Length: 497
Image (cartoon, rainbow, N blue to C red; front, side):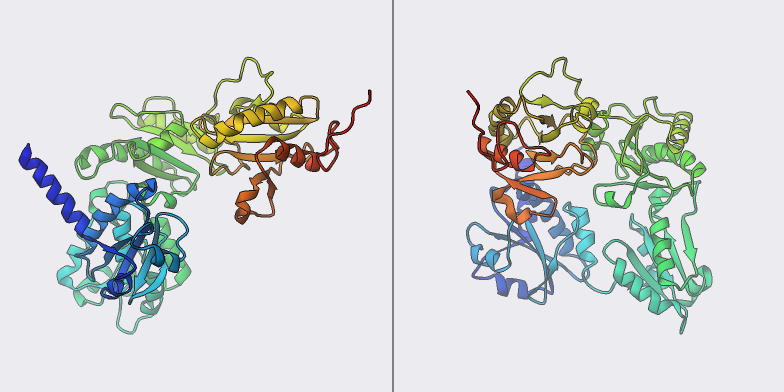
């Protein structure tokens, strides 16, 4: 046990050593020592930084041996790197920036897990496409990811187009090119071939597809259309590639420990997907543990057993769940009904309150139209989270506001956005988020924003504070009709004796 502990400490130390620690005194000289450096500006107390740290360290260990190598560095913005962080306009944590030749090159906008960081940064260095000889061609195809190879004829018209395409897509696609005579004889001249990873080989589609187009737009479309095949392996790294209408089978997808079992279920999904090829539906398989948050959005919670759980989203982002146990026939019927628009959307909702007579009306997904959209009143709605400290502080103010306005033509409403689906049109990124809806313009929710966040203001954001008087003044000013108890300036009207 003691030996295992020592081994774990050694491994952890080795990973940490792979990331270079820089500060104000050595930052410029440190980044200048490497052709390309990815720098993480962080704060030790930051939760997102703590989550990124082990992924960053794993990526650093891998990228040291990249050809050419990429260095990863970190700067503590609260201590030794304060001036450096100010110099590079670091406003939040973690902030990642790419340095080349000792100078800031660009913001890092890639994935934040180790494999994604490695792939993104490897694409930032060296040529966009690797030149292949007959000797290393097969080795290039051995990696467990898609490879796109150009077979270039001397003086052909594909080369200049391929160079532009590979440079544009280098961050997402692994490119190779060759002019080897034997390879051209086997695969063709001036053609582009997309090779699918060998671990995804199946009987429902070819292991490679090719195009002889020399049109840049056509080649880009060809790569995009064929990159993930009939049923792609959808991961946290490539999730943005899978557009709705989308059907996903969630199960224990593991191509390292259980490739045979993984493909057993994927092949069954593929059999159904094959029947719907060309109909605009995207299919994917995902590791259920990696997408627990999505499954919870579908009301599925923890997935047990070996069989896949199937969920879908249509072009309007409505959610659907296959209730039957997985089988080819059940999936076939589910996709047919999904395609025909016959399925009832899944709506995550708390039960409708038995009584809703409090000072603040409670909205849930199932009664949202009734208490918000079609209530015939101006409405101020708060989307909150039960665990949110700011929401807890706001609660008594909101209750008092509801009591003060009980005789006005204004509804004060709240909704737990963690237990209910937020309707489209309401962008909720944090808690609490408030919207004002004039009674005759319910299709255009207007975000209510604190004065202290004025840097976030857009034309649809309306300003106000979070004290009782702030809300009353705001509603008095923006109400469709003047309030009974307050004038437009928010001053209480005198009551007649």
